[in-house]
Length: 383
Image 1 (cartoon, rainbow, N blue to C red):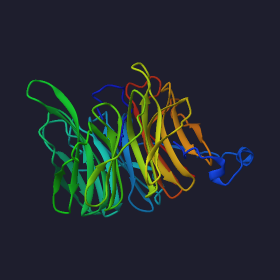
Image 2: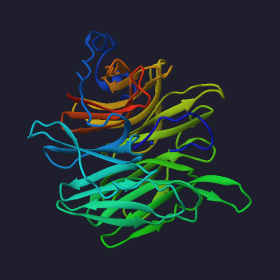
Image 3: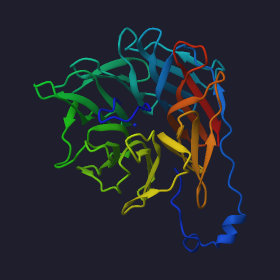
Image 4: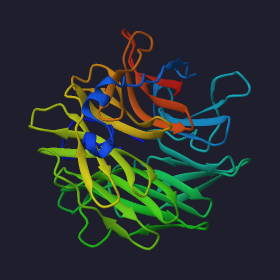
């Protein structure tokens, strides 16, 4: 649900295990040193049926059906791709309710089942955000409210059920004097309508870049504050609370979050150490009582998304020079960085990673040499 963007106070759009003492791990330092690091995923590049575009989000609807959403640069309209693992046809572009929209995109897809899938469409005007629901046979278009705004507004989605869906995103406000400010917003679907949900008192959120939910009583939304610092909010079924985080450099933001349990939450993004810094990897971990920043390789750059796998946490993003796509994955005492394979001779720029069991899917874009526009990119693995 996200794009890697340049630093700026108006951001237009959102990794490893904690270093542990050997004694706490029940191992000696020499025992850790003698244990080889596990091999990273073996990635396969898959063909997308669109020549020009970008993919921002992905979701698995059932054991064999996967959706990926984004934008087509050829039609300048939203893009929905689907893959059925049982028919051998690979990724196919499929009809969708936003197909006739222009100057729009799909920012997020989330599903609780094959009969309950939700796709959020970016809004390029001062209206509400269209959110399309698939019940397994037909589409219904709903409207998520946006405070009075100018220009774009976007939601990222987390579907718990057909009667419980959260949207977290951003919009541009205008004070009437021409001063525009990026602000975060929360919306909730209760089975009959979307309603705007107020941020907790005192919360500072300029932008929500991702949201995830494990249940109706466990929802997480992440982004950055007006001071360009990472921010995490948690919903416990009754109220939202902004959590206390360690300061992350001069600037920073969180772009992705994954939850494997109440005492094991990972959030990843980017941290900048100076005004000219292009960005280093940022990884934070929640142990049930507090957040801590986790050391990442110096050559790792902005991270865009993170997922929990049977082998531990895995995040994707770019290296510090932003010249190649990378994956970071946790090991017993540190982390490993892996270069993602090139597609059509060019590096992948990953936007989102999803894991269902041992099956990994990464979506994003690639800009082959000589191409006028980037093309959608998909990598898969079993790990």
